[in-house]
Image (cartoon, rainbow, N blue to C red; front, top):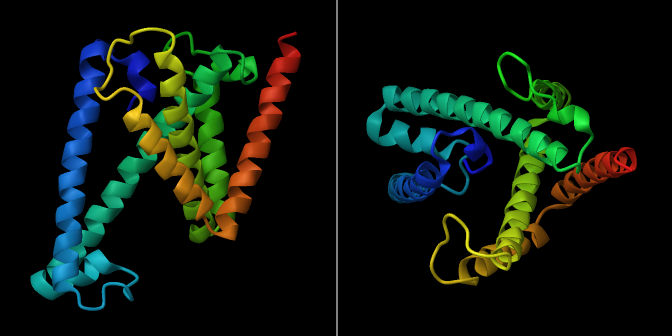
Length: 216
């Protein structure tokens, strides 16, 4: 959400409202879903599709179909959002000379980072066709946590440069706690997740070094 702030009409007003509203709504919905699943499905920990199984018990077959369809729609929306934000991450890094400048190319008509979008789509397609669901889930979890940890650390660094358009109360407490939680989850990652994360970091480091070498 914050990644695409540069493309909004009034980011100073829209982004804080959208972030806080999203956190509140998602927190409430996820908590309610967890409570219902725990209260209706006795073997929740052993189920591979807990929400669909829970819906089957108290809503019947149509409930399970509805839940499965909703999951498919939700994952489609999440994939589209990740494609949007992922390409903008590449564009922003290229704009700051942290990635090769080609990723910062903007289409003259549509005003979108077309190279970054195509690259993101091709990488996602390659992973989807070559990797298993477990590998993709591992890479997604690790990459998100690395981004979250980096974002929390950058908040503390940016606070030293002066007031921002939007700051939350409590000073560094929230980013410090969030950074600690992200690092704790990373340290508890599985060997597969560590390998996938290491490969991703190596690829990113190579692209960064190429960009720095070309900018000399």
